[in-house]
Image (tube, rainbow, N blue to C red; front, side, top):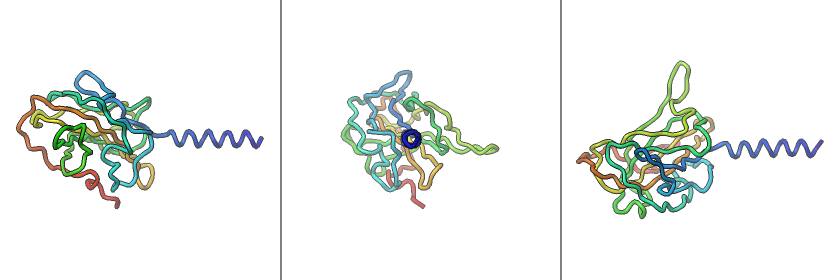
Length: 193
């Protein structure tokens, strides 16, 4: 009987530990790529919001590809084997690399938001809840060049919140002469209080 209780407890802990998600697939136009994503090592959330890990996750794997994407086309990420089930906002950012995206760690005031999913009311929820992917359109006036595209989802079910993110390497072509703003640094765009 004691063994059965221990086994049940371990099963509960395993379920709790695995109750997270990874954005592991880049969606670009009508295609997908896992090779362009700096793959997270596990599905654990990132805490605190002041950590450099907020950029592209904890020690993400090296992406082996930088995909070419036209300005004005679809960009986004798929969730691995589940849906978004923690209530909280989500967003997609672009960060202009100072050189090759493959060599950039995401530091500096280069990030700008191109999409967000927020709260709904009556009943209270979040628009990203239950989704298997988050997609948006790259603004047509985004300058051509190499970028990191970053997805984040912030689970508000615990304090401090849990952050889930991934980055992928892209090269935007046929872009415009826009000056995306405001730009932010990651970390630095969220405050712990």
